[in-house]
Length: 176
Image 1: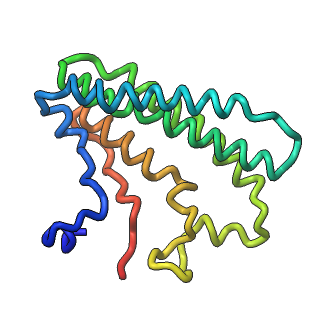
Image 2: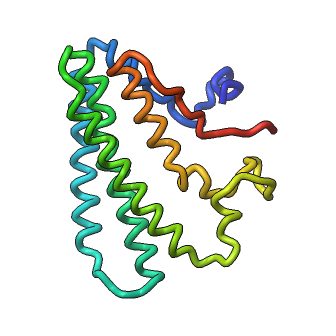
């Protein structure tokens, strides 16, 4: 990515850090253009998930759980990104952090249900580290299975709000 940046090729936009949001003078714009639309998206996604029929079918249960984990990810984003907004305004972050923890617990429950219902007889290869045919030294569901990216954002938000704490998970561990 850095090599591409050097010649003007942008592979993906640079991520905004929570600390840069908390230090920004445009925090109102961030909330209006990012946080509120994410909340509206989460509501729309939740409505679509609620419209799914509750069929007693293991394959459909996987689809339903997939939709639910997407809803939970969409619902997770607004409170986690509300933390730097509140911090910038000198407001309490307690309610947002509590919501983040609650949504993370809900997502972990969905993952436990999915792990119990995997179809592949060799499913562990998807969920654990080890040699495989990809660049990464883990199965393709490993980071999803650990909710690493959500865990990372939670740790970042808590560190910003509380002035330190746990170390931030890297979520991409490989040595090419």
